[in-house]
Length: 91
Image (cartoon, rainbow, N blue to C red; front, top):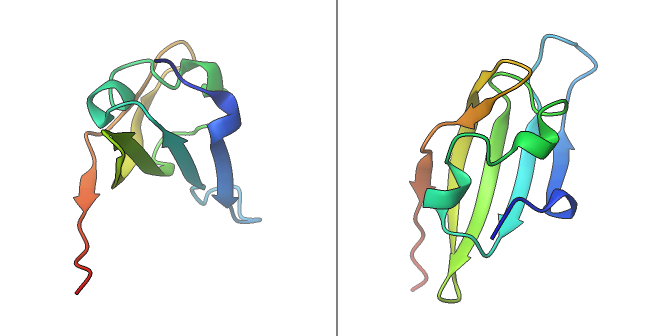
């Protein structure tokens, strides 16, 4: 699949222009696709360096929450970190 702009939402930003924004992105794509270079290319003018992205990916119907951040945005190319998977127990 590919990046879907309507699945990306800015959930937090500060009036301080130096503060990083927090984004939420939900997709059926695997995180291996989402973390690939230029996956977020259609949003390159919105996502800034070090912005945090909560990625909810679902492969096989089980959602996975990963926290990543933009580690490269040159204005023509964009990349995010591999991220940290948040696990949860439901007992």
